[in-house]
Length: 480
Image (cartoon, rainbow, N blue to C red; front, side):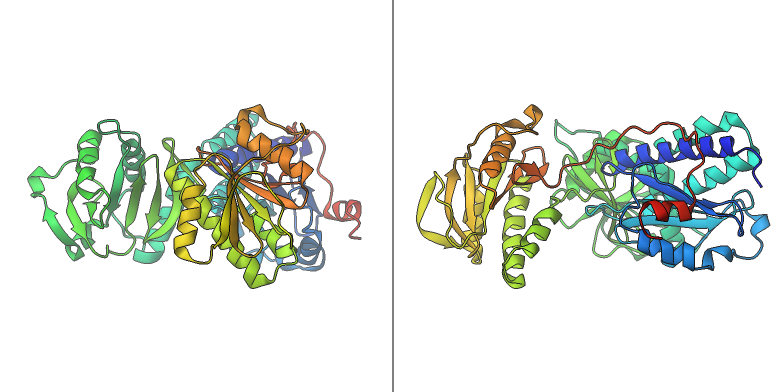
């Protein structure tokens, strides 16, 4: 039993704050929450300073207030710092979780958001597992000197989280007897991403394979063993990437040297860095783990987040197939603009009688279910002004002007297109505008409000008071 509740409260605060800050840099703005119990007979307490668990009260009540599985730890609990439970045991929609047991803190479960644009939730799960382990270590040591350092570890944990997930995946595929060192591999991936060649960012694929499986590779050109470029020779490896730009070829490395140029399927558990200019992706066995951008790893897949538009279309009076087709049309035009790095705006008009917008009319509206018309619309989006897309899946006009009176929430940092869309939709509450910025952000705007705006959460302060019990928390939410 922990004798000093204040020490526990302070430890929880530092770890949760470091976790939240680290995840917010790896992903979008993120929140975190914790449920814990000091003993199987003691109450579960809820630390949720930013209301992450709102809306999940019913499921949490069923799992912990009515269920008893959390009181049944695995055997030999005393011989391990932290024993992780199976992820399938606790599943909450839109949340990533990690739970388990330890001698110093009987039970704990951590929560954070599962953002819709994540490449993979694996690294974030490892982040939560690290938070749980650090809390156990803090409580086992009882040293105040550890408190702030645990939070700092979690703030800078992104590379370690990616590494831990890759190691686990490769062990699952190949077993624990592997020789490819993951930390130097990740260091090389990031170093190459930051190395331009004649002013150009890297393009092409670099694949790291288990050394004992290199014989399975179909090499187009293999370098002699004494002349294989070392991986730490970043500039040399960057030049070699020119040989695989915009092709199906890949450079192959065993984690120490570049073996040659190859094509075809790679051996199991291979790690691939897919460079695409200013950004790229890290893959294991062809599955995305994270993206590479600005010299670091990030969870996002760099695709436009149009979830709020999809929800709006499904909530409208459109038939589901029609709503889906309209969503696919908008997604295609947005993706086209993103690849070519130009801004645009799309006015989505769901009225039976389309709005008469000032712009370049088309004598016969373009049927956007036809691929040639859709490609033309994507090109017209580059013209100043907005596309006018109607509920019947046609393009009615382009280069449309958006105007209106000044509204709250305007942001000078976002430019004229964004602020014009805020004003325009405030004056036309039946229209939705999708704004694509040249530097990738995509905004869905309705009734003068950006639907997919990132929330600014209030600053966290030290957890001076013991968090409420689960019973108190459910009572406050009117679930008891």
